[in-house]
Amino acid sequence: MTRYEIKGKQSDFSFACGLPSPNDYGILILPSWDTTIFIVEKTNREFKVKFGKPCPSEGGWIDLTLYTPKTQKVSLGSYSGYVKRRRELKMKIPKEVDTV
Picture 1 (cartoon, rainbow, N blue to C red):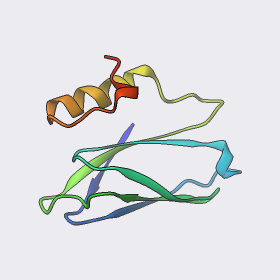
Picture 2 (tube, rainbow, N blue to C red):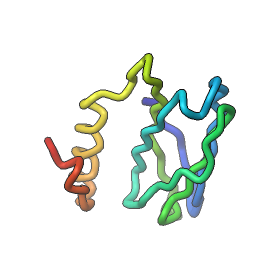
Picture 3 (cartoon, one colour):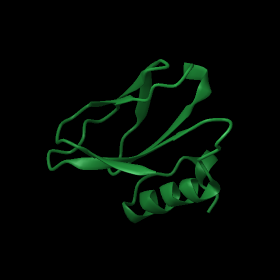
Picture 4 (cartoon, one colour):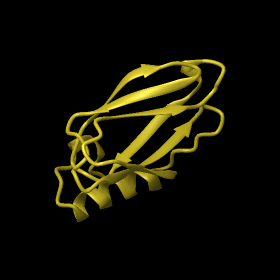
């Protein structure tokens, strides 16, 4: 997982990845603020996401993991960290991931 700083009021994020096909990878993004994330474009060269709520004015960050069927970079630990972080920030945790 790699952390990327997000500027205050930023409402989207783009990342260049350069893989053979958009079907060759998945994306896991964990933001530091309470928001939803929508993938608006996913190609073999890059992906773009939009945040349901822009980043707070003081700025924030996202933790980003790209994974492929071959590497399986996402583990239960990543999801556990997601749930733990949302609990720390007193954010609502979707039922489907509240397993910790």
